Length: 465
Image (tube, rainbow, N blue to C red; front, top):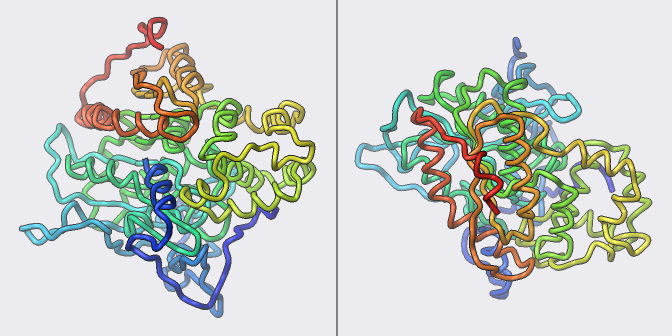
């Protein structure tokens, strides 16, 4: 398994299909279920692709040349590398001539990865048409998407342009677009990060690497201030918002903000179903509909630390090695159909599940321990929401994050989403809270962006499930 991007290249230009798939209804149904410093001079867009290079194609979807990072990046985190207009897939002409819900710009900006090196990250900024009616200047929501996959065609910024993307054995649905549009309707500007390596074609997406995610989200907020036509400024209040993978990213960013990005005027953070303890989360994912995410995790950690390749190779059989390669270009829909409900012991050399492999490998234990969220204190209010029946991103470990933060004196609003058990490991117990709690989460965030104080309910944790 190579730590390099494994997308296929082709000189044939294909475009994503925006209509329904001519595939069995099971494919669409599964996909819908998954929905739930002084800088160097930036390289112009025309220099994105070296002369004579071929476009990157991932599972039949051509990745626009915009997503090919240049050889040289600015030195300052959050500096724009390049921008271009981004057509929104769902947009209407407004009476005043402005598009509704706003005007979108595709971004590439510089961030710092977990190894301390420079990384180009892509994303999108949307300037809303609606006026901000809250207190203070127009605020910004930095939104971290939930799990989209590991193929470049799954990038959240691409899903804003193509809410439904169909390729050769790939399906991607922009399910977080709903939250984006709700914030825009409230008059808040939104910036969406694609994370490190998702979209940008120079490396593999590092998935649940907390430092990569947290840095990418905070640097997206920085980059948004420099977008031409943006009404937000350094004085604008910023909210971090995410669920599932996005909840882990926003939680990590909230912890890292005081040291990494004190210039970001953070007002509050929503972390829904955060994967704070990956050792526990991997147990929930194993054998579930989202079992393919195990491949994304392993691929991502090997991308970040190539020395892990020998450990991975020694502990995977031929089936496992093939699965890791396969998942590296998959979106959520593909992974459900291709690897859903797979038990990891089918991938391991000794026939034991991944949890047993990790327990026997000190190096793997150390890697996961470094990813633990909850060891640092957020400086601003946080809202942690978790479904009590969530068996994918386990409820107990998400609750523990709130307990850990409360123990450090953080301002925590903890919300245990009580719903009936909707099925074992079929994603419903994970997706239902995302939908039912979204209105409350957005309302809580809007209050923070308006300058309203948040009352911590840490005192109630002994009484909360």
